[in-house]
Length: 527
Image 1 (cartoon, rainbow, N blue to C red):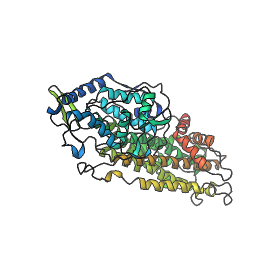
Image 2 (image 1 turned 60 degrees about the horizontal axis):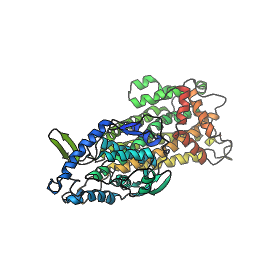
Image 3 (image 1 turned 120 degrees about the vertical axis):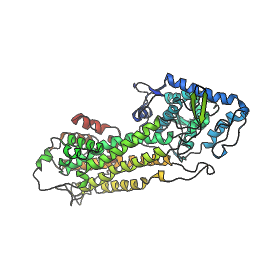
Image 4 (image 1 turned 45 degrees about the horizontal axis):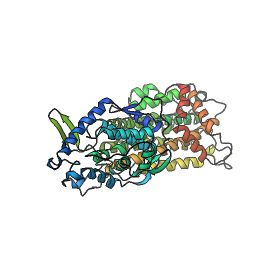
C-alpha cells in the first residue's frame, strides 16, 4: 500500500513543531506532508534525561538488579527469562532485528514521517527511559529526509505495532533499508549520506522504540485529515448535483437543524445554504409541483452530518493517542526514586475502534454520492436532462459507466468496512492473548478514503455536465465556482471519450485542495 498522499515538500517556513508539547492532528500532517521542521523542547530533554537515569541505575546494578521486564529479561512469553548483564545491549539489538518481520508493499513517505514524529513524541513525554540521543536521531531523520523502508503489513496492534516499528528502529541502527533523495538504499548508506551516525541501542531502547501504536495512529491520523476535507467536498458535490437536478434548498433551513441539533448536520446544512444562495436555476422552478426531493438530495445534512460527527469523535480519540505514552514498561519518577510499571498502554483497541467507525462513516459519503449520480444519469429520475447526460443518447453512452464505476467503489467499501477490531488472534505463546488488529483498521480506512475521493470525483464531473445542460439558467455563485474549477481540468463532454482521465483530473482537484479553495473564494469559509 502506497497511499496517494503528496510527497513531503521542502522544509516549510512554518515554525518548528516542538516535540514534547501537545500536538494536534493538523500539526502531524504539517510535518508528514508539508515538511514542517521539528525541534525538541527543553523540558522534554529534561524529562527524557531524568527517566533515563532510572534505567541507567538498573543497568549499573548488573546481575544484582531485580528482574525488570525488557531491561534484563526476555520479551513476551520469555519475560521470565533473565538476561545476563553483558548481554543487555545485544538483547535490544536482537529484539529489533527479530521483530522486523513486515511484509507487503512499502508505506508512503508521509506515513513514515508521521510514524517518526509520533515515536519521538512518546519519548519526549519522558516516561520511556530512552536517551536524548535517540530523540535527536529521530528528529534528524525528519530534518534530513531519511525515510526508513517500512512494509505495510505484519502488525496485530498489541504489544503495539511491533513489526512496522521494528523496521523504523532497524534504520536507526544502520540496518534494513531507507530512502534518501528519492533512492532506496541500505540504511547505513542513507544515514552516511545524510551525515547521521547510526545508534547503538542501550538498555530498554529497542523495546521503547517498538512498543506503541504509532503505525496505526500515523496512518489513521492522516486518513482522518483527508476524511474531514472530503466532508466539505461532499457538500460541494451534492450542491452541484442539486442544481443539475433542479432540487430544493428548503430542507436545509436552519430552523429544521435547530430542532435536531446534531453539530455535523448543522455544519453541512450551513454549507449547503451558502453554496446554493442566489441560484437562478433554483428560482426558475420555485413554483414547480414537485413536493420533495429524493433522500440523496434532501437528506444530505443528516447523512453527511452524521459522518462529520463520527469523524470528529475519531479525531478526538487519535488526538489523545498522539499525546499518550504507549510503550512498556513505563517509568514514573518520584522523590524517592523511580518506579517502572508494566501495563498495557501499547494495546491499540481505542484507536482500532475509532478507525473502524471512521471507515464506516467515510464510506457513507460515497454511498449517498453514488445515489446522486444515479439520479443524474437515469432519465426516469432526472427532469430535462438527457439519458446518461449523453450529447446524443444512443450514439453516445455519456456517463453510463461512470455510475457503474462509482457503484463498484461503494461495494468495495462495504467489504472494507467490516470492523477489524472485532477480531483477535492470540500470539506469543498465548501471553498476548487479545489483540486489536488496529493496523488493519488503519489500512482499511486509508483505502476507503481513496475510494470515497474517486466516487466524489465521479459525481463532480457528472453533475457539472448536468449544470451545462441547464444553460442558459445560471447556478448559484458557489456552484458556479465549483463548476468553473471542474471545467478548468475537465472539458464538457461533447462526444464520448475515455472518462478515466477526467476522473483522475477531478480526483487531483479534490486532493490538492483546489476545489475547496475555489469555492471558498466565492462564498467564504465552509465548515
